[in-house]
Image (tube, rainbow, N blue to C red):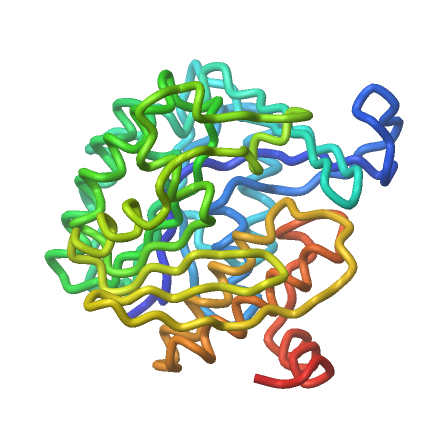
Length: 334
């Protein structure tokens, strides 16, 4: 096969505050990077040693050029990136106020990745890909939702391993309850599902008042619900493995049949949590594709997440294989 991983979803320029601890109104300097979960995961996995590609879209503008050029520099395949006229490449501004305030502002009016069509993905040859990762946000609007499902069906028909990063961003859905409705329908196509407890709870929302977002921390909502019921529902859908991330505590692996496995994390001093989940996914997918067991794959994933939370960015700070192996060795090994 030509590629180890194909990701699908949004791409942006991310502007990170360089004034650590400054409230949003007091930010004076910003650094640039490429972002969006599928971008971060593609770059992270590529740096670890996988060959990756991405399905996304950009506008015919300098920001789109920046995104594509940076992906090329990271050696991520760009042949499935579409340039869509009449759209504007997207941006995200990220505040960094440790230990627990990380406000986000999304600029996604006429976002190109909301206009991916079935025609744009119809020629993908999944004989060339070992695995495929879908991000939940890609299922939020048409025509991209249908293109995403169509692509996943093609991948599954070829026996490609399907990963789902739940990727809940409340502000990107017309109704937060639609998130669960949509993802519950998508679950039977998946092999491995990755998310936080809050993201899982979002899949069971029945009232929009169950979601609380403080300090514009869109990536860290507070959500009410019955986590055990949602986990049971996910596992009954046919997925082989559910990974529930818990930050410094590590991750809990849930299997059909009731087996669970606790995999510890790596305690570090947190600077910035943004992108840690994407780094986790990169690490887990790497281990999974090396035929490592869940414990070892998740330990690598936890290490990648811990690495990123000590940095002031995401994809641009993703570790190489050598770097993360040294980190693991220095912090108790596998």
